[in-house]
Length: 507
Image (cartoon, rainbow, N blue to C red; front, side, top):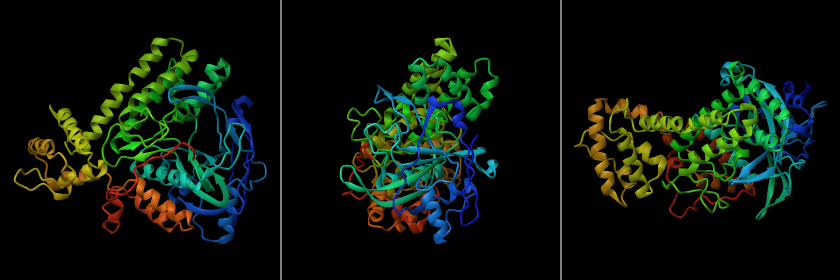
């Protein structure tokens, strides 16, 4: 393994290993990042920085400049040879053939100083996104723009603090370099962290081209890296698939329960870890509409909120097909994927049970949950506010319904009022104190999510050179379940004149 180190002004030595190279040259291309002119370290996640034992938050000018040059790819330590990996994938349900890291450079891996404090992960891959052309850029320029980079930076960190598995954002480096999209914008590079960036598409690439020896090496490497217990199974690759199915089922339930819409769930954007990967045209639901997608490219609504679980299953079938040469028996592969639906349903129901404060399941709870979602959809009630504002509702039928909650269902209130009466009966049967239930509900129903209009506001200020609002929003999102009364404006529904999320894949 190759290593490299960079002496920095705060005397932190980085040693990047590149174990992915051991798979062989057909898995990647060595490519040096193009970097940025006059790079500036504009945003740092102190939480992500601590994962690696770094201190990027230092205000020392020379230190900041050293980090900016490193994490833009402008300068690299001697002996550090970044790579971009090759993969293929299905995009919008169609086979797209070879894809690959079109604007991502893997610097290598760093040790976590204390894996027990880092979700058990002893090593993290460090990847630059937007640092220039790679052999897989196709018709792109290998760049990322400030707008989309801020969105990825904020959302990956927001999701982490919501408790949802996700890649991390270490820092954001900016530059005045112009980049042409629908309009002229400026370039930025996000440094992303993950224990592994292996995607479903990596396996599709080697399987569908008939390179089964390479497929076997990739499967063995992935098992050793992310799921070593599979190696002891009678069919290790089947066990790997089963693990991915289980992790993906849990992830989909978590996405659904916070109203998150990924926007582009292609197989090349699906992580073998079961983590959220690639923040493009995403959104958190405002008014509840199961058919909503923020992706303007997705004209059929393939990746709408309500279809995400079914698409995850479709993608898992594509992965199972890719792994079939190693699994052997098609029935075993199909059975592994068929476990997705019951696992997802169980996870989704359990989380909704907690979000509504229902405690141990009882007969009729499923119907009560379904009726709540129907009332929300009928009124297009704000997803986040509906759950958060429900917690103060008293089980006492003579107590008034909180006005803020009632206003969310003012368009068609009949179903909502019928539901409240049934819900209160259920709470009375439970016999739990209102204050105790409220506390438990507030621990699972966030007050703050990265709403589209909030992101747009801080992006506009950042494009004008002011990142203070972005940093403030980031600080709020670090504590999504806390009340934070001083930041109540960040919890409000979008203004009536706010534009609905409408995002393209062209960032």
